Image 1 (cartoon, helix red, strand yellow):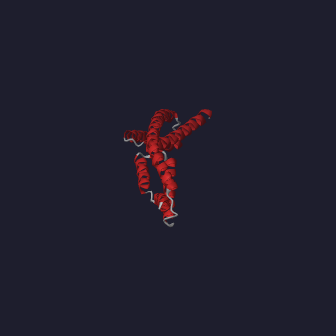
Image 2 (cartoon, rainbow, N blue to C red):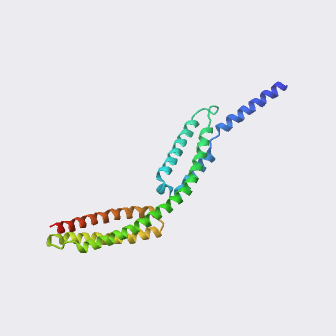
Image 3 (cartoon, one colour):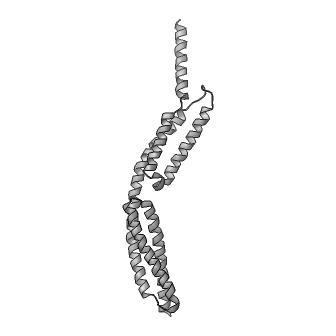
Length: 199
């Protein structure tokens, strides 16, 4: 009798372990997906794209692993590894929310500094434009440059609006493009003035 009771206890423990390991980690899967959605809502996919994409890839890989495990017989299924991975993905995605907020602040500060530098550059370009040679052949080129400077000045207003709206990533892209253009104008005008002086 005692032997039978002992065997039943062992069998119960084995079955409990088998079923607990074989249970689909749906709650953990849902939590990981929700955490990634929260990270995306915090714009981690824009401000920390590499980290966010790595987590998304990990979730996709775990989902494939869960499906593969589900195709096995109920006694050989074991979701313990995937369950742990999902818990880690949730934790990493939650941490990514705070990191994305920090990165946004950094990008905003970088944009504001770049905007100050761009404003100085626009002033330099205007000064050089006033000093540039006004020959007949150069008139059209100078008008084109003046038009480009006007476009860059307009972009400053757009960048300020983007900053006000909290779209720091787009603002950074715009300020970078405008700075490159303003630098090119400065070089072009400096070279034109230098040629006249040498001549």
